Image 1 (spheres, one colour):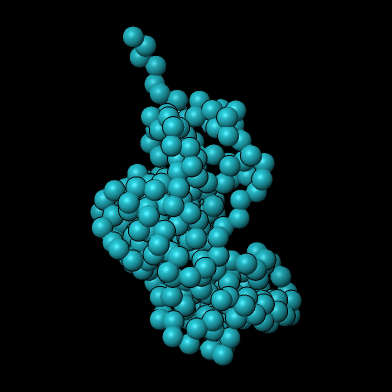
Image 2 (cartoon, rainbow, N blue to C red; image 1 turned 180 degrees about the vertical axis):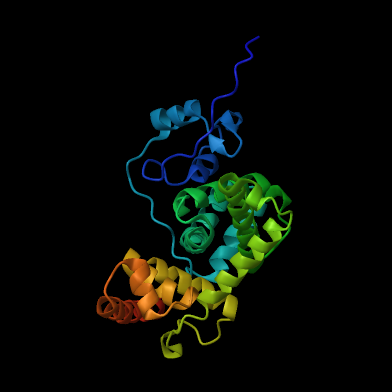
Length: 266
């Protein structure tokens, strides 16, 4: 019997196959035993590329497609439909990516790619889903944030070593992620452009995050730095490597585009 170690796992490149969860949910005969430690092995990647590869880009579904739709997907997933679980998670891809990007910027200084980290969150969520006891969208989103916090904590331990061995790290990270999520709702959006005058703060945070994710990277960054990090315009200019005048104009255009994107949501 060979004593060789199992192949080193790695996550599929997002440009090749954006959601490994899509594979698990849409190809029920796929050999799930070929995964180790949260990633796909090289053999697994080869099998996907040979049998199921598609060059068609994958677009996240609109987060606000309707709360009823999210609850319906959740009910179907709890009934055992893995494809619906994949569709449900895709609704929150941009939301989780923005949260990951904020925490990576604060604590990991760009050492981790936010999109790759979200893929890892999806894989962990898929494995842990049988333990999920929630019934509605809000509980599911909170559960995803908790998994994101745990994934960020593991990355922080990996890169920071003994500096990140505090047993309270997961708890603190979860609090930070929740605070950032609440911060989306604090970005000043014209209330008259709201898709619903009745949305609660948690729902508005989701809607703002989705609208923000539709903007270009520069618009996202200037808004996140100004409103989520609380930086002054000179500080934002320094962080982005731009002039103060260009940053102020970028922020004005970005906020206008954000309000329009938020108002265009059904």
